Amino acid sequence: MMSRYRMAGLLLTAMAAGMPAVILYGCGRKPSPPQVGVLMLDESRQPILDGLKEGLRQLGREVNVDLRFVVRNAEDDQTRLVPLAEELAALRPKVICALGSAEAVAAVPLAQSTGVAVVYLGVGNPEALGIAESKVDPLPGTTGIRTGYADRLPKRMQLATYFFPDVRVITVLYDPQTPASAKGMKLCEETGPKLGLIVQSIALTSDADVRYFAETMVPGKYQLLMYTPAPLLIKHLRNIIAPAAIRAYVPIFGLNRQACSAGAVISFGPTDYGFGVQGAHFVHRILLGTAPETMPIETPEGSQLELCLNMKVAQKIGVVFPPRMFELADLIIR
Image 1 (tube, rainbow, N blue to C red):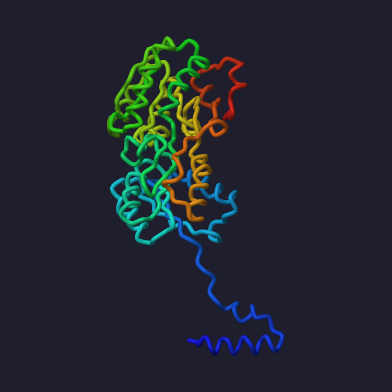
Image 2: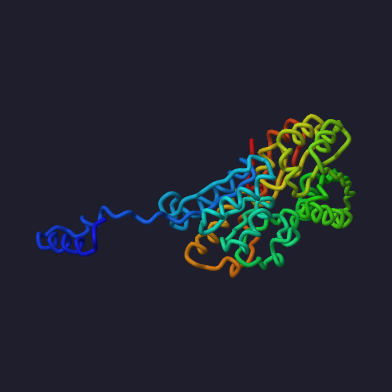
């Protein structure tokens, strides 16, 4: 290894010869970019990660140049989330991004035990999960974006009266084992009578429950389906619930654009991609040295919310929206 005296001698010689000193130092190793850990349950979280990358790009941080992602995917096995979170924390990244509720529950305790910052993106009810002090106050070493899906169910029910004026009964699917889902069900039951609607609740707690519900869905049994935020229901929307609803000519009112793409005829809410874009500023500020707990938990608002219509599904099941309603839509899938 070259001593600092030898290096100084070479530097003076180079300067005397008119050589730029930077040439001698060009062989030095460039500092590695800071690591950002990413914990995801499965590939369905990819839009959040894509949004996070875009949000960081907008803030002037290019992936693999200004920072490096280290991703751990549990491949739809929740039992792997805690070991994977611990694996990420052992790498001592500047921050771990948990892309959903299950991921946040696995990662947040590590903020206290290891000192690694945790940012969660897209959590339905963090305070009920025990990973936040309140709706806006995070635990030490953490912060994040709450989805607000459950809080907006009353608004979805109101919109349903505009888009489906003949509907009198709304069937709401929920998973009582998920706090945000149970909260959403309660809000629906409180809101329905105020809008002149009858709310029928159906509890689904397992894959078998979902399959049985889908298999027994027949034309005329339900007028309109809604569902509250629960991993179980979101996971099976595209491949089980939506196809069964289309066969039975039953419209579904979904939580977000992804639901419309999965077979819902209408949706209202923030996008998974938007959670990532919005959460990027948390990561950016943590990399600059800001303590995560000094940044309040945020909820998507205003322009981050969108109303989506799926005309392909509407035509299949014979739904005709009032013409004036198209003016309200932010996105129409044709």
